[in-house]
Image (cartoon, rainbow, N blue to C red; front, side, top):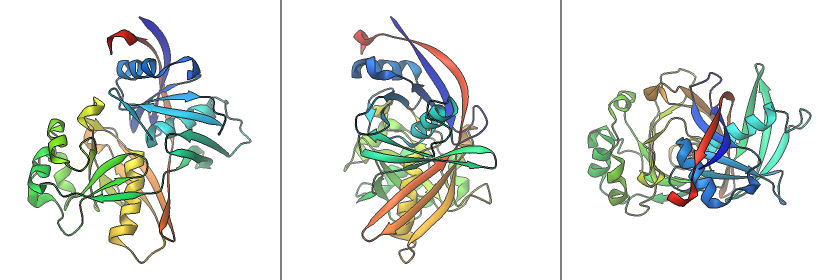
Length: 301
């Protein structure tokens, strides 16, 4: 067995054990892919991020669920950059850096709001693909009825770096009843069997939030639910401009998530329409929780 120090930060919250936990591994250049996967599996969070040197950007970030690598993760990015900035690895005088990810080079901005450090990350240009599977089976897989889905809005796969199925829900009260059966997802998501499922609605607990959501993981990821999701929140902003309000050039709102898991978090979303493309940004803060000593073995994967 090998040992590795992993830092636990919570993203999209300023209070420990709220928001979404991320494992952060600094100075990860000595780790191969197999070791990264083994560490992520041992940590057990929805995502663990590994920070490496880059010859194209200030840092390179790789993201792993307990089951596989993913191209981009919003909350792990927010947590990692909050970590780098608060530890002084990124100097106080710098208010912008770049990160290399599997979806390309992305800019990161640092701002202080009400004496709290906030991280803003740009995501990949949004993509959407229609869902053509069974809506009845989709509702069953989330533990709700088909009538609770808002049929006036489209159900689509969306991505700003990671694919998820966006499912509009009529009322906020449905979310507390949801019980995902993740093993059903691949046979329902016929166009993208490895996708996660992201139900959302235009009602919220917090009057300052515009949308409420939950995020049910792909069974291939090794987890059940993601508490507060950055990439899915970003693509919800693009969804709003694409399907709900086609006549405006930008949107700026707050997504709340995690209340059903007692992991209350907030994601600030800004999307700007530029011709046929959109620039998608999300912002959030973070908090250090603890240092973990992780045991892992690469020969059992």
